[in-house]
Image 1: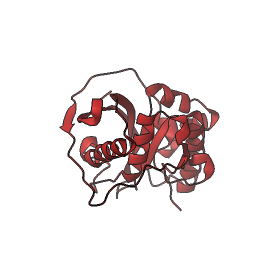
Image 2: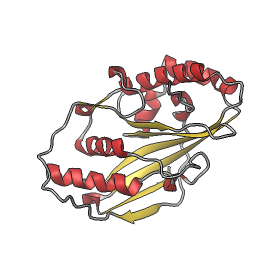
Image 3: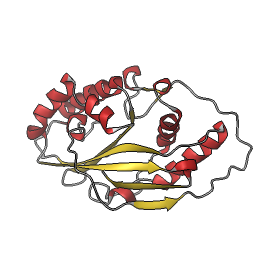
Image 4: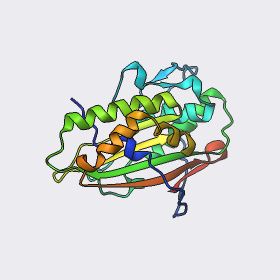
Length: 222
């Protein structure tokens, strides 16, 4: 049984603080040895460890930029075993993700317009007394609720390390979508349980910006 260690109820509690250092990278050319197949798109996409219908992303509810990023994020990979404490930018294969967005845009003959996305990193530590089954049930209900609210592009969580530290991350269409996604009863219930389930938690907010024509991208502090 897969158990989440990063309840969405906590991960979508926000402030309006802004600022931080941006990392800007050019997009490497990704070539396929074969001629690309015509662009085909399924309506519902698996974007989290949960695969039931109520957890799937409806691509038809998104504009093209958000559709392409959501599809690319199905290839999101963790690059480090110390992800619970490692710098966020170095934790995932962001360059590959944005490179995949560029390939998808080319296949669709889509002219990409600069778009920013809201990213939440939830760092936590659980004590030995935490009941994993309870934590997982709360998280799954919160995820279904957030998915129904719209704009929830990706949810990933790891496994606690030897001392219970972990990382979970959410990628949203916008901060407004994230706030709306965290306003329901399942999130309130999970938020009320956070103090008993966690010995520590910290929320970092980031902005992923992919510039016009996908010539560069940056991940900065929100």
